[in-house]
Image (cartoon, rainbow, N blue to C red):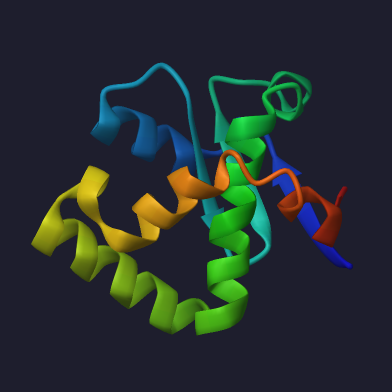
Length: 106
């Protein structure tokens, strides 16, 4: 079981929210989920969002942090955020009820 940390009111997630023109955002670096505009409790009460972000944690584990970041940025530039393969996979994981079983959120 892998541990995942959540940090609220993160400036990094605020930048993501601004870029996406959203009121709230979550961004993953390694095994930490950074939140902006949403509390940890509200985030955890949204299972599809949690699964989406856990898929990114899984992608980091599989690829390593430097490789994930380079691939993610490249894909977003080449395909656009919504069509980037890593994002598409994370959206597919929103329905995967099993992904949560692999993680312990602290």
